[in-house]
Image 1: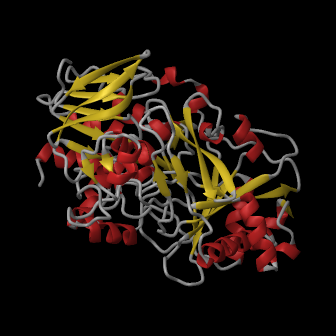
Image 2: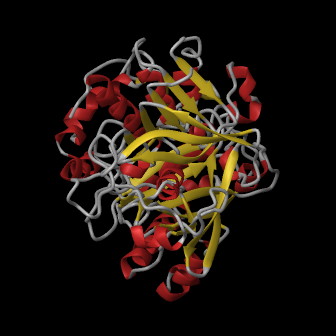
Amino acid sequence: MSRPDVVVVGAGGSGAPLAARLSEDPDRDVLLLEAGPVPRRQRDFGAELLDARLVPGARSGHPAVRPYAVHLTPRRPYTVVRGRFLGGSTTVNGGYFVRARRADFDRWAAAGGAAWSYERVLPLLRSLETDLDHGADETHGGEGPVRIRRGDLRHPAARAFRSGARELGYPEEPDKNAEGAPGFGPVPSNSVDGIRVNTGIGYLLGALDRPNLTVSGGSSVTRVVVERGRATGVVVERDGCRTTVECGEVVLCAGAFGSAQLLRLSGIGPGAELARLGIPVAVDSPAVGARFGDHPQLVLEWLPRRELPAPAGSWLGGCLHLSASDGEHEGDLEILQSLVPMAGLTAGTVTVPGAPLAFLASVQSPRLGGRLRTLSADATAPPRIDYGYLATGEDRRRLREVARATAALVATEAFAKVSRGLVEPGPEVLADDRLLDGWIEARLGTAQHTCGTVPMGPADDPEAGVDHYGRVHGVTGLRVADTSILPTPPSRGPAATAVLIGELVADAMRRGLP
């Protein structure tokens, strides 16, 4: 493909769907560039990346991920990872595929217009999925590339979790993709029959024989070429050699860190900051990397009374959503159950005899506290990434609430049938705000749900980097189509939303929407 119409950078949660949908038009030549490997058959992904009981992204040294050194707080260094493989992070994540809430779409529509309203995106949400539990109806899809199934909750720990939630009076939420009241229920997942079906498998493997689609692995984009206000191509490094690929349009789907960093390296970002690094400024766009949001997370482990069976199909157990005491955001606290010990998730094994099991407790309020800064014009130099967690009293209060709610669940009579109690924190720490704050800061993690580094909004808004269809303000022929463009993070994990973004932007491009 000598001069493609569109170059898509990144074959992950958004890029794979976008490239697949664009290439359904036989008159549009599409080149998809992926930094990691690109298998041509499902079995070539290997057992580790397919087994839904494993989470390769929990292993910072796994060859299918790219690590980023970050600071969750000024005193809390951490390592987060992103997928570097066909399918991106959908190849290495937990298979959680829960839609954003209507309130999220309301917030996004306030910035991006009616195209982002729940009513307008629902047809796309339906078209991207095959819901194996509900089939095609007014809410669910029956013919899309992403197969969805909910966990059966038959594992003894999952049954005890459900009973404990009932004991505390939490409502049932049997379908977390139906916009019902938050409560306890199974997790919709793109893992089916024990296999994690990432977007590379779901969208691309069946499209690789299209003559107008080229998918190139081992291809790292280092810069977008911008000439006289137009993106004319990308600089690609492959096997140690750099070449320039010219094209009609560039779409960045490199993830919330990768896309923002690429824009900055290409001269699109805060002008004074880039000029100090010797990067020629193409567009002074202060919004790029200025803020981002994510979900702070804690791991609370508990000791089983007896050896429990390994999960049969997925590491995921039940999931409870409840609201923080301020009531500002409905269902913004999440307690997610792991049926594999944390020691197993981090080691790549399903069972660890004698090890505790865990709940992942997170705060999913739509807060923006992070910042990304480019430190060098060298594309190989990583950016500085600060999450800004625990910056406010509300941040700490919500984390205390979700930690105490998790402890209360473990302490129920129903859950005590399988559990001997929490490993930590103990009753003294749980009862004291100051002690609990200290425990939280020392063990703080992140759900790795980064969004908002290049938020959408009107061209005259200095806090917006792109428009409602991902077009970069100030540059023709350049879009961003991944979770970078969300003005706030969703109040659920963003995997399903990332796929939606690929679908939405591809639809806009194919129909020439203004």
